[in-house]
Every structure is written in structure tokens, then in C-alpha cells.
Image (cartoon, rainbow, N blue to C red; front, side, top):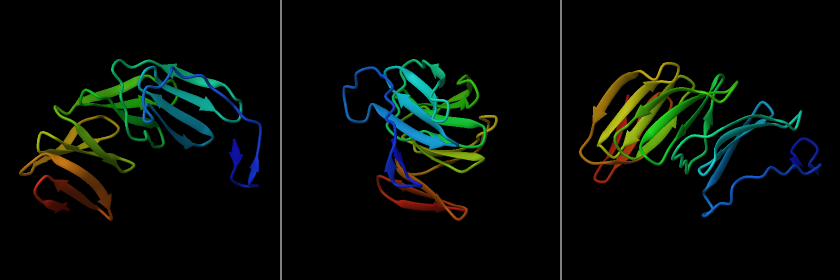
Length: 165
């Protein structure tokens, strides 16, 4: 493990995950000395860097996250490979809610709202606390990219680029 503060290599910790088939089978995010690992073959786990313990290890069927999990003050947000978007409790790894987007998902998140650009030609704004759809907007073709900046939602479809306020 590399300590950013003193630029030293410290004691190395190893945690076994199931054998990966591709380079993108394992993703991780760190927040508040907790590493949140998403392994598409075995689920999601939280590893406490201070205690060196696994806080939780939860299996989720058909999980296939190819992007980093997003972590905010009380949740972990991930997508699977069958068009579902999950909100996971940070404390115990339980599923708070899940949303079936009906098509491949490109997520972009703020602290309170998740924007899902989907291949069903729609962008959905979800309340991250409840999973309730706040609004939905349809465009001309499947959404390929999504980004958020300064209160604007930027979408790239197969044909056009959009900016939603």
C-alpha cells in the first residue's frame, strides 16, 4: 500500500477475490479509509484500512460493474450488467433500492441525484436517497455518454449532443 501523505510504501495488504476473466472485473473506490471493491463474480465488499478487517462482503446476482462505484455520505451506487442500478447501505452492504433502467446505463451522480443515460433513449434523474424518479427526458437515440457540470447535464447520443438545465 502506498501512503500518499509520506510517499512511502507501507505494509502490503492482500485480499483474495475470485479469479478475474478480464482486466475490468474488479473496480474500487476509497472513502474515509474504507475501500469499496466491486467484483463482478462475487459482489461488493468494504475493507477497513485502519482495522484491516472486511466490514461486509455481499453477493449480488449478475453484478457486472465496469465503472467505479460512486460513494456518498451514506450509500454506494453501482450498476449491474442487466440494466439495474443499485443503492447499497455503506454500513452493512444491504441493498436499499434498485432501479431497472430497461437498457444499458451510463450513470453520472451528484451527492443527491443520480442521472442515468440509457440506451432506451432516455435520461432519468433519480433521488439517491429513495430511488424515486424525479424526471425523465427522451432524446433521439440511445445515450452514449453523460456528464454533470455546474448544474448542467450533458448527454451524447448516437446523433447529437445535448445540454439539459
